[in-house]
Image (cartoon, rainbow over all chains, first blue to last red; front, side, top):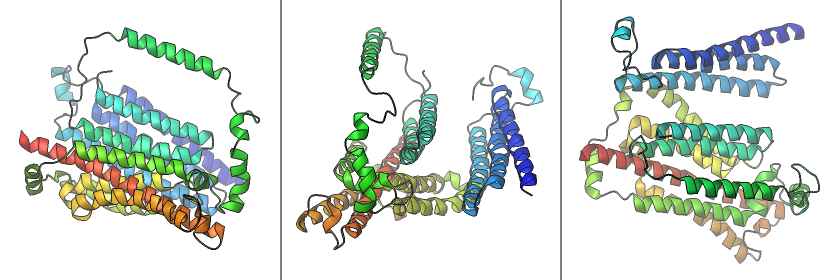
Length: 114
Length: 308
């Protein structure tokens, strides 16, 4: 049982770290603002979420477990909502997502940094 | 760096990193304060200011070579000065020999609360903390007198304060779920500060952050139905008054200023009561000053929008 929990928790921690890394990579390498906040969204929800679940399996007593669970709920809610708010604000202020059609026509108009 | 928005974000990140550093040094209370004040509310207030001023810094024409030289020389002198200091963490350093051992050893008997930081902050060093609260109070008064709102602008803003964020269903629903929890957490931090990291400063800031989130979503006029300007200004003073008042009550009951031993028959109970009241005073002042500053900036933005 102990062994099984440990293995499961390690798998979760490792995959969580993997998603954090891919999120960071995406933030640096993706072409425009919307794809980039998608990448940060992955970091906050999948990455941090899996790491927190992995840590919950390692929790020594129930109060640590409960605290980690509350942090998990909070981060899931807050991170996803923050991404949504940013995307909405960007759309509202006139930033268009980069698509196949407008990529060739106006490459200079896309800001290189968000 | 010309982009002020990036500067604000970088300073927030810097605060968050130093909070992590403090946590690593086991200074949990300091880390909590840094995270909530430095990374949280100051970033927010800076952003509120950025709405009033242009985002990009003007190119300055003067070359700050002399200033750079002065800064480098001063920094080098300061570093030279630290060479004489005892090594970090050395047991016989003066800072560990003066009052710190007494606080650590006697705190449980004299004050009777588990969190030594709170007992040092609110009881042993109560006078210093009173000074800190007065500093915040003064800052609040400064902002209040600088950013005065004319009656006409107020009327205009009241008639058409934009609450356009209210149409955003997802934000509204999530915020409605989180704001009560934020406020409860603030109260927990406030009143559990004797037993766990936290206290008036952090609690006040968290409480203000919850209300500011509400203001951003539902508009200033809605928020000011509850937190009226006059009430907030009054509460700014009430916090300091409560803190100093506890000190004077101690004087009248035959003790020293802010010497809570005399408040109750049992000195330890007196200390508990004194710390609770003093921390409450801190929390009230901090929360209302933060809210006042944010409201003032927002009024200003609204006024800006409609005067154009």
